[in-house]
Amino acid sequence: MTRTVIESKTKTAIIGFDEPFCVIGERINPTGRKILAAELEQGDFSRVEADAIAQVAAGATVLDVNSGAVFTNKMAEDVRYADNNFVEPPLMRELIEKVQAVVDVPLCIDSSVPGALESGLEAAEGRPLLNSVTGEEERLEIVLPLVKKYNVPVVAISNDDTGISEDPDVRFAVAKKIVERAADFGIPAHDIVVDPLVMPIGAMSTAGLQVFSLVRRLRDELGVNTTCGASNISFGLPNRHGINNAFLPMAMATGMTSAIMNPVALPVGPKKLAEKKAEVEAAGVILPDGMDDETFCQLFGIGSTKPRAGKEMEAIRAANFLTDNDPHGGEWIAFNKPAGSAGGGRGGRRRRRG
Image (cartoon, rainbow, N blue to C red; front, side, top):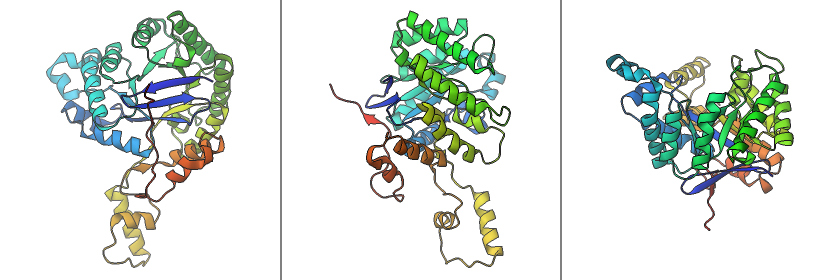
């Protein structure tokens, strides 16, 4: 069976058909996160460290580290900051170092800038996953030599110079091309993790069926592992968690072996907490004196004041159990133990000592 091995200094994560689903935490990404980007511009990595810890606690076995920040203020002072080739390589190195200092799971180095990819590869301990290569000729010629040089696995995204095709046969052909070109560099298929590209089902009603069909073909015909940006499927729809919770086990059943996703349910904020308390008070409910906010959240089912594993993680762990990738349900039982009890989930397996 195909097994893609990713390692940190002390832990190993395996992506494989007969392995538990690999959750690659996506939150260390300043793209679209203005507060995080502003903090990074000021040299503040505290949110990055907190996100790393929270994602591992929620069950991520690999962490994606993306350096795609825009430093608006520095750009106004120095035109070099308008160039991602200038900004991202040193930022990626520092991000990798900060994350490795607080967690010990394997990493996924994520950037469109070749210099940032190599900077991350130099800083990463163990054997990280590289994200990513596409079927574009220029990208293949730049990224595949890095993959070979550092002997790391790579995410292969199924688009090429013509863009992203809505035809699943075209996306399969692009993936096949990447696997074949990688072989020319001496890179084995088990070190290729294909992203078949998940389209939003709100815009394309067959998006789910396309992915399921593609994943089966990628598994059966190319023998490669697969990943995706899991939340893409529900983009623009209400109750996105409901869609994601159905999509992930279905994708797993067709052979998908990993996903880049947010494993964390974000804490209940002060505004939502105040609104719920006002609602309860208006309903005439009398609460015990001194009830703390966490107890209130649990009592009225609005979440938690602390980061915790999201509902998608519940669906994934249930699917692992149902597909016999959680023998005897040990991880499922540990996952459902009350907070604070012994036996929480693992953030990766210990590397075997040879």
